[in-house]
Image (cartoon, rainbow, N blue to C red):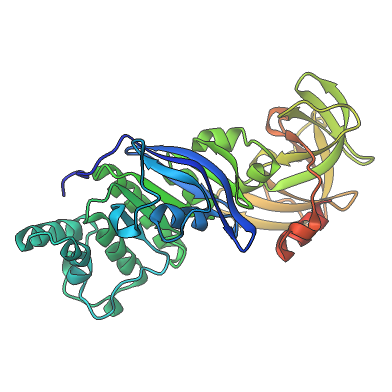
Length: 380
């Protein structure tokens, strides 16, 4: 397959918004996607990422803003005239058509000459490694094979943008990993521009050039995987980027961005991500892999440590995932290279540079889903 014929320099979302019955599902999305980029829209369910994708695809009209390709508006065009390819979560294959015919469908709709359809379908089938299955019906294929057909069908029309909505969520863990690699390979091999919706941060980090993190319809941060991983903009992004330990504490000392935070039972040194004052309520974010169990062989109690009781130990291959509880009843997730004994007291330590401190946002419990509310109440 040739590289996409209908290329563009940039696709621009300007203040894109969508409301349903007065409720905002998406607010003020501003994003410029460059030709050849792989962008992931990331966030919990109900955060607006699928709404954003459907607005770009033309399946939902915008309530605000505009979508431009090289300064020409496309948001007023019907979906079929935007020249975008779509891969859905549920594959949406025609059950009565063979693999070949499913893939050929979009080309026939575009009145592509028969010999060219034949050639392009054969190339697409080879790309997704389904040569042995070309004449089978979707019902005779596994979930992963059906997903490959859906991807081949989307890219065979050489769209200027490929939109993917949680395409791997129905597959088992091993297959998800394989398909992640496969989608990234096709993206590069075909010079595609891809917009990918997922709630799985690992998936997004491993595949995307840039990530857009959404929460309640609003963009929280846009950046490269590395930027979001190392410098999340706020506690919500941190939570989404695997900083599973979110601890609400009070600032007791400030020295530039180096802060000391604590409550009556624990004191920690960390790094403030924006200025905070002594006495302020803050939320500290620490990844489990940055909160380490001090080995029992360590001679002296180290710096920046917290005592806690071990409640659960899981073996994870090269290391152990350990659940602990502090004196005030906080649950924390930590990592250890030795299995501590359940019920024993351990010392935890963290590098102050990896303890990120954010100003506490007043959480409005009423606006949260039941799951989020329970989590918030536990954390407060």
